Amino acid sequence: MKTTRLKKIISASMLALPLVLFSAYSQADDDDERYSDSKKNKISYSKNKTTYFDIIRISRNKGIKGKLAPQMRITSPLNNGIVAQGESSVNAGSFNGSGFAINLEVFTRDEVSVLVNEATQAPGDPGIRNVDQLGNLNPEFPGLFVFINEDLITPDGEIIPKNTNLASLFNVAGSDDTPGKGVTVWAGWHLLESFPADVSKFTITAAVRDVKGRIGFDQVEVNVNAELSSGNSLTPDPTSFPGHGEINQDGPKVEIVAPRVPSSIAVGEQIALPTAQTGSFNFIQVNILDVAKAGIAVDELGDSVTRPEFGAGSILDPLQLGQGDNRNFPGLVFTFDTPLQAPNGVLVPAGGNLAPVFNVVGSEVDTETGAVRVVADWVVGGSLILAEGQDTVTFTATVTDNKGNAGSSKRVFRVSQVVGGQLLTAAP
Image 1: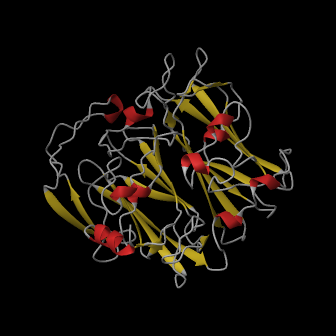
Image 2: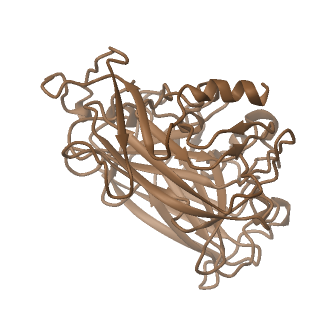
């Protein structure tokens, strides 16, 4: 596709002004009694499209529409963080783009849902990614809007104009069961695009709309360092990994960001193989800060072994599930204290390494320390098999750096009464 053609496709739905959200979206009548408890999967939704155009001017701390509107939080990149420029230029593209991860947390505060088909990328399954809908609503998550106020250059060397809705480029989405009437929905994307040479700073604006038309948003400002060629250049190649080491104070700082305590998680079908309706579909975000600057061996593009099958930007290494490390990120070990039943029939015992089925990973630079922060995402498509009477699941993430030092984090989550994560949200 030529650059001019891409611009024409996007222009119909790009923003006329920065931070002005144009939404051709179904209107939900505030008096409509069809909304019920999403945790019981009883929500219905009007299929009437484009009943009105809503123009909402949003800026930091202003423009939230509606009482108890959903809350949006950008969990990566961090505000005032630093990312690479990327190697693409116009008509000379490269998959070595800026290479950071954009992760979003959406918290609904009452029984009114956002519409989303939760999905994890897998062989033959693109997840929630719909590249052909760039600039339009993402059919898997139609209430999501994500804007960057600078042009982007694609891996094909084409221009995505600034303030285009980027929601259709997101890879994965999942949920957890927040205490009270609301739920938490997460979405993640590994950005393969690059920034033009004259861009030193940009703003990400993320907004979400629930089925009653209420809107929440968040913004972060991010710095671009032109001396950093790409996100993938921030981390050494997996072939340099020295092997797993002992946990000690010199290891990287590891944090499990998603799910958030005290959320509970859907564990998935306990008898049959999990499906798109009965899988867990909880979203996991792990942040790793290389405070010792020893290097975290990871190939964010998946070039080491998986790019031909899954495309650039996916680190999935599913043939390793139950067999060993993710060959794109060998220093990551992620475990549950309960077995995982994968949809393909593989049963990973409690304590088995689940890193091979992580979906995407990105890298940025921490402003205060200058250390590289690696952000890894996974949406759990399988089921966590509980022992009789078990009502909690322990998540443990451990990462070894290239000096052989390891850091670790552990979180304990209660089990939701909802079987599958998709039952927590209404489908589009």
